[in-house]
Amino acid sequence: MAELTRADIDDILKLIDGSDFDELKLEMGDLKLELRRRGAGASGASAPPAPAVQAPAAAPKPEAPAAAVTAPVVASGGGSEVPAPLLGTFYRAPKPGAAPFVQVGDSVTADTVIGIIEVMKLMNSVPAGIAGTVTEILAENGQLVEHGQTLIRIQPA
Amino acid sequence: MIRRLFIANRGEIAVRIIRTCRALGIETVLGVSEADRDSLGAQLATRAVRLGPAPATASYLQVGAVVHAAKATGCDAVHPGYGFLSENRALAEACAREGLIFVGPTPDNLDAVGDKLTARTHAIDAGVPVVPGGTAETLEDALALAESVGYPMLIKAVAGGGGRGMKRVNSAAELPGQLDLAIAEAAAAFGDGRVYLERFVTVGRHVEVQILSDGATVLHAGERDCSVQRRYQKVVEEAPAPGLPDPLRAGLLAAAVRFARHIGYRSLGTVEFLVDVDRQEFYFLEMNARIQVEHPVTEAITGLDLVALQLAIAEGAPLPMTQGDIRLTGHAIECRLNAEDVANAFMPSPGRVTRAWFPSMPGLRVDTHMQPGAMIPPYYDSMVAKLIAYGETREAAIAVMQAALRTIVLEGVKTNAPLHAAIMADPAFQAGGVDTTYLAGLLPTLTGATT
Image (cartoon, one colour):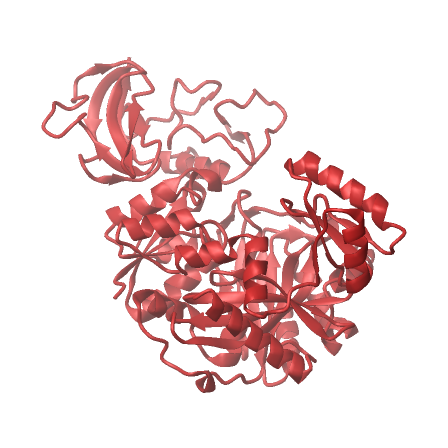
């Protein structure tokens, strides 16, 4: 087994998600992979398992603190995925007929609102969470998005 | 008619509900947390939607997310399973508001059984025996009450729960000191110093009655004995209750039906009783307004599909049978297989299942969400499978269970299978009719053998 594929990394991340470990170190020949939950101290004592911090999105992001990924991992679509922070109906614009919050090519900061998710008539604004350029809008306006589903993709600045 | 059902639960009960839905041709949407998105239920449901992150408070307990997901996926009904939101009034009301069928009782039913004192009052009104006792504001009241009921007594906080503020009193001499202590503890812990006293049942069995009601017809489907418990958690259940004298059984069944009828209950439900072995009496404990974990033992001896009946009642259909149509034959025992380490103080043992094999065997039913590669996440309860053994006699059912425990394979995590094997082989259990202190007494001999 010469190298890890993106799918392998996703599988490993799922494993960690379902476990109460905060950190994983994997060495296979020349390849060395270190994964750490956001907020977990470097090789620190294990955090209490119950309110486990979600691993960032579905793939390791280059800017994720302390996530030292030395393996040559290239995210397939390019850029960072912005996941839905909760389940609900996704809206791209503040109200029907209004201009969308963001379009492909727009520059955003971490605080830029990229959409709204409605749950039982409560509106929750979704920030980009990262500065960069919008490269793709994946979630459809007015449709159900699940928790963790990718809404848009951003090429980090 | 229910065409597409949203299941707001996980684990084996999600799979169990999907089974009946598939048989009935009902589509299913399973709401899952991030930790359960590859679970067997998620694979078997027509569709799975991610409700939220792994912790239940952010996913399975989110009424808004459940109702929103059910509506957005075109479901016409919501099944809450057991635990989580199954007896949650807010979910039942939100479903009604949004035009969804809640597969469970009415919000008023949930209120009637929601807290112990309200339920106890309903039981008294329905002429159902409750544990003898009452409130006491002064020491004189308490002494008079204890005198008429008989020692030992238990002092409980009216606002309490979880054992806090509970004091056992063995004699009149102990009462004054313990009463002061209980009142002080209740006031400190709950901001409410009111206490009540009830009879402490030293030798008790936990026997419960399965109720089926369409709102007009109230039927019972026999009783279950759930006395094999560890720290108030049921470990082994069986139906019928072994060695229960006929007048006592008849009294229990009638009382359960009377209680359900009194509160206008409509759905599946279970009325729980404490059977006082020494006095040959029974007392109402509470009513569970949902499908129970141990429902398969009732299904085994009646041939009913309780989930199908629950769905039909929710649709508004009248019960398709009379009391005389419900025949109880044979004996069934259920063992709850938990991912826990018996030798290490029953520590939960989450992890990845490497092998899972539950072959078909005569008389055996297995309800599980385990399969090779399944992940047992650390966020939820540790039950991984229910083994249900059926035989024409209790002896035959025990033999089926013993064969099953020797045969099944679940590797990658530790399970309490050795505990179940020890219980099935124990002469006291085999004799039948053990009380709720039984398992605590058996454990030291077991751990002595395994360490």
